[in-house]
Image 1 (cartoon, rainbow, N blue to C red):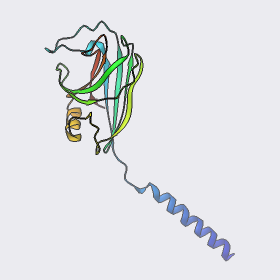
Image 2 (cartoon, rainbow, N blue to C red):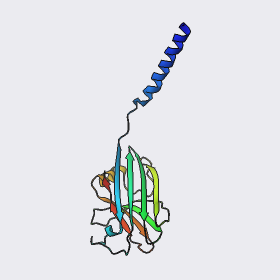
Image 3 (tube, rainbow, N blue to C red):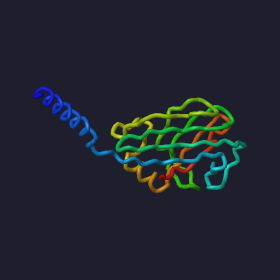
Image 4 (spheres, rainbow, N blue to C red):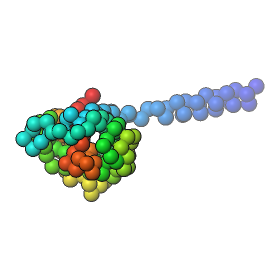
Length: 162
């Protein structure tokens, strides 16, 4: 009987050890999105730009600590995407590129996706992690997708916190 009791005690102790594995703190998650549309494209003076496109899409950025998981999709571009990136700028402002994506040349589907460690920023990231988070938190960044027909941009969407 003593051997059976020892086995039971050991089993309970091991269960306790494995149950304690969940005691690590969870990293908060923040999600940012952008609804992309050809109708959102702007001229330099902030007026709507005629792209002769009905393209739509979305961008999702999930931030967990220093990691950003992202996906940018498109539907109905006038041709395969040639560029896509994040710009600094409000809803009626055009601004400089702050993060360029490596893209898939598709007219519909996933333009780009990936995971970035903000402690090891890629060369296409031209501002600091804190500056990017400030832009996103204040709605001062947008995602833009370009095609051959619309080299200055075919669709865009403001990045907003969810």
